[in-house]
Length: 356
Image (cartoon, rainbow, N blue to C red; front, side, top):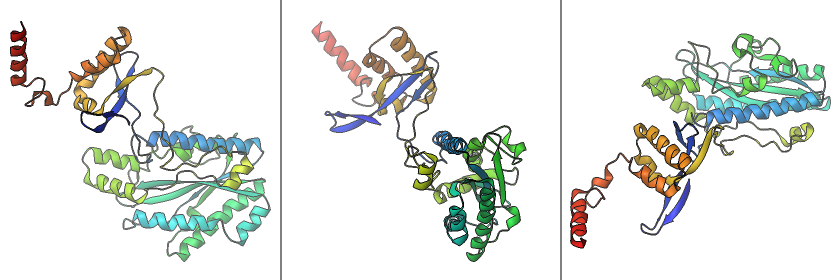
């Protein structure tokens, strides 16, 4: 947050930027440092938008250059005893190795350009963690693209077996991206409900698992919010196990071939912008201590106060801030020495009477 130096207390005091809706009914704060995690309820929707935009740029670039794309889903067998942290390490290593070897080298010589990978995680009380990868395989020809998708699936299953993880070729899926690169062939038509492929790959926060057997990570958080202990434990495990997982990485070679050198990778360190609707206006900043002391039940009144005094009447912001200070609900000003301490009030009255 923004902060200013307070010489009276010899410290930097944080200031919270406040925005008010133009109807004067809603108040929000902005400019806070975000964690950037795709498992955070505040940051996840923004991450979904950023990821969808990047995938969309890849698809548009591939279409404009006459390239072909296959949508591949890679999964592994798991049980209720499978730890998500172990699965992340194993599957991540296997996926990286899938792009090595003589078979992939030959396919690259014959037109394979590379792939874009996105991880997705679901969980269930009976099935356990289900971490899987969605991959866009990009190639110069349709035949090479389909062969590369099949080779990727076969190599995935073989490398999993070498690490002691079971899977089968039958449960891996690959389909061509069709219809102007906006939809998938027959993939998940019932679940997609008109979503484009970019939204499908980026929609982990919005999509539900295959109920009732599987739940998305946001659904685990929702269970935790209403007091479900199992959901809370599983959500905490997901946050810990998936911390630092890269959301979108476009290698330098593929960037160059697609003409997307300006596109940045997406990690938890990538800047998370605030999403402020058009009908909001930032009015000014108040000290974090004052803002925190204005209880949630009094913030609608704070919004109306800012709207009336700051927007309609044009009252100077420092005066508005002093008015906001009167909405504080922590009663600290009534402590001994506070401005509303009875003894302090009596002292001011005595001083005033002496002057009179």
